[in-house]
Figure 1 (cartoon, protein in one colour):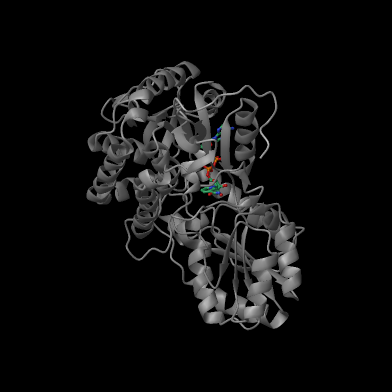
Figure 2 (tube, protein in one colour):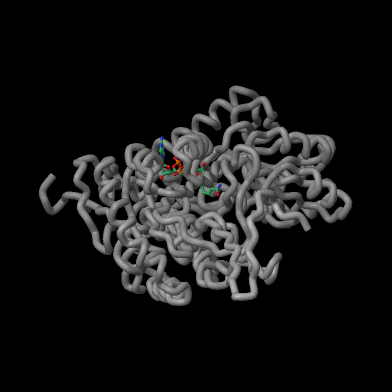
Amino acid sequence: MTVEQKVKELHHFISGELVEGASGRFSNVYNPSTGEVIAQVPLATKEEVQKAIEVAQKAFPAWKNMSVGKRAEIVMKFRQLVKDNEAELVEIICTESGKTREDAKGEITRGLESVDLAINAPHLLKGEYSVNVGGNINAFSTKAPLGVVAAISPFNFPVMVPFAQTSMAVAVGNSVILKPSEKVPMSALFYSELWKKAGLPDGVWTVINGDKETVDELLANPTVQAVSFVGSTTIAEYIYQTGTNYNKRVAALGGGKNFMIVMPDADLEKTANAFIGAAYGAASQRCMAISGAITVGKETADNFVAVLKEKVEKLKVGPYTEDDVDFGPVITNQSKEMVEGYINRSIEEGAKVVVDGRNPSICETSNGFYLGPTLLDEVTPAMEVYQQEVFGPARIVVRVETLQEAIELINDHELGNGVTIFTNNGAAARKFQEEIEVGMVGVNVPIPIPVGYYNFGGWKRSKFGEGYMFGPDQARFFTKVKTISEKWLSVDDETTTSFAFPSN
Ligand code: NAD
């Protein structure tokens, strides 16, 4: 390979500038739509992470002491810069993740909801105040930033998830270190420059690229006070256990298996339209993607599958550069093979293929990591494709006889991120809302992602630790409370010595 042909070498973003990786270790970044390697991302060593943490720690006191109003102004400028540079950011997201332009735009919009909430930091940082809690003592509480905090993010939302993990952390006065997914590091490097342009002091914002070695230092380093993780359940559990072992605050959000219950009274045409977008959008690579339908009653199942079949067969998979594409490739060839493996094994276990998305026609003309939409019927809870999160466009139908059975199945599943029901029966919807053991619940809403000013997080093995993403909980997670009892002595005050707790 000549020098001209060499793929772009990416950097870290430390102390307000791009810094070359020193480890000599790199990971390939692909354009999943073409299968080409478009860049190489450096994988930071423990020592590089330590240096970045030192820079972040040095920047912390001045940032913490800046008035919260001024900090919010910088976040507001960042928001405007993201809007001004949206078109370029969309192209970067699409190039490194393969999602469609419309979807990338939507991701930025949802990500900005977190930035909007962070602009409200002055309000969210307000403490409590009580006058004369006893003997002319006033009591009040304040919220202080933690110091250096870290965010570790997944590949499937290069902008929305890191924005949700970090915007509030910055606004409330922390120095933030982001470790983006090594599969999609380019978006983060792009918006790092926007933070700098917005006036964020150097060192407050760091992007350190890497893999397990990088993450392990963020978890172990005593300067790092809190870790926000979003990714797969296995790694989320590891992050939670390791981070808390080092006495850190950890919120670790994992994977999902998100079902749509289809009741006998549901309008099947409307329900199918809702299912298709929520199930196959972004090649099903969303933690809140609908993983499958649980149909109540044989007639519902037969009719719903028939309506779905017709619609799923018409879906178009292809590169984001084509406007009429419904969804793009999966993130890597390895990911494609994993999804194919799930489909193959489910067929061996007795699932019925309604639509087969293996070997879509686009694979004859492109080396991109494409899979067409697959729909599997008569899937049972004993099958692997039911039990595991399948992060690619293979969706399932599970047939049950009653709503009670559907609720019990979902409650027995180890994952509990999102769930929804389609029905016009108020009593059924109410029973479902009350009894379902899942963190984010929809009624006639295809993907029950809360808006950015509500807390986002699953139950069971979809989230480890008491911290949420999006929402006001971010302000709590990234601050610590100080409670002050204050009295000013005057000449008239008599002081006595007491060895017991005061009684009223
Ligand atoms: P992943 O778990 O493979 O990677 C996430 C992050 O962890 C990356 O930054 C990666 O570099 C790092 N990592 C990977 N292996 C590691 C290891 N052994 N030790 C330390 N760090 C490691 O997840 P992914 O494939 O990038 O993302 C997809 C997953 O994320 C899906 O399971 C999806 O459901 C989940 N997700 C969840 C939410 C949510 O809100 N619950 C949101 C988005 C994505």
